[in-house]
Image (cartoon, rainbow, N blue to C red):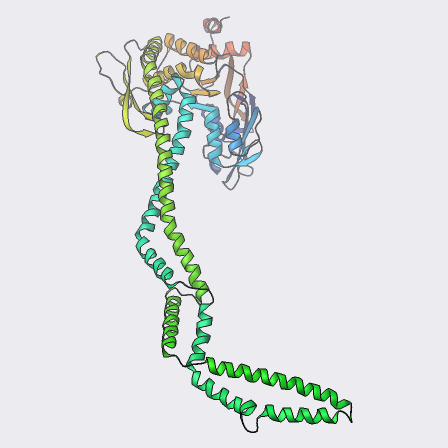
Length: 551
């Protein structure tokens, strides 16, 4: 409930600070005193937009702050969802700056306007003569039916499941799209995979093949060169090996006379062994190298194939081709993986759908059960409000598809007068009839409503006398289960309030300022008496005011 309201520098309000009570309160005041200004200021902290035009003094900002008692209204999840600190008291503050920009705060935490409106919708409902148009809104009508049938928790659970259902459908649609695209290219990828698989690539084979081809391509040159070298080294008449052997023998013989020659002789012998090994190796290479046209052709063909694949896939080597092969096989596996995922999600989707259908059936059943009772209760309330011939019919129609509200559509049909057929509420012309119908509906759901506060702005439109007293009784009854604030011009309604606030204009420094005062008992009697009188308050008016207040 709204426990305190502070307004600074808004329209005709310089500074206003007021505590509000539980139960049923009334606000009265002369036309033009500023009752609508109060609602305008309050609407700022309920998420409505504002601009620099609301500033009384353009040199300073406007501040509107409301303190709400929210314990027991199950708002913890809303605060947690938006990472706000929850407390049993919530302070909503709105600032309109001199440059026209605005700031919003919840418990001193900056928030966006959408969040402030979301919370505001859970705290206060303002009912004005212009808001009755919502009576013809299908969502509102269904909400009325769900509220009266105690479907609130069921519908919330259903909507959570429906959101999951919609998300699953979107996920399946996206996977099907991806699977369709993947399958479209599947044949091409399979061809590429088969092509790379058939080549049986080895990571280092290209380098080995290129080296082997280089040898074979120069076989004759290699053999000729090696034979020439061997001729000099070991095969010719004056070859190096023989000469080195003779030198070795000479140094070895002379070492008897000079010890240093022994070391030289050993080194020469070691070189002699190395030369024999070198000659043997060269001889083996010469014998192994043979010009082989068939092998050259095979290697050339293999390397051409590898080079073709490297160019085709734009990679520099076989390692790149092997990576491409893994990627292509991954794309081929993706089709199978997507198919499996789609099958699994479709199965889950069907399970969720079956659960939703059961919940929708339960919602429909609960709605159908209370329609007759709700129709009769609304009719009886309308009779109390002077609409003896009013009739209302609630039609529940079955839909073919699941919606966020189940599988029902609802339509309220209404007739205010005898002999006039039932029709949609939008065709009703009388604002007073609309107001009384809305009051009847809201009074019936108020005990079950989780909303802390409802404000009625001129609910007395088109009513007077005894009917006004009935309206007051209904509002007072609603005040037993929630905070009800009514702005009224009728003394019969004002007399029913448990608390009475008076809006008036005062002239300060030759400027009109709107102010709000909570009246005590004596002041209430005088204010209601003024509402009953034309110009001068008579003794009869004072007496009637006391009677209206039960004094």
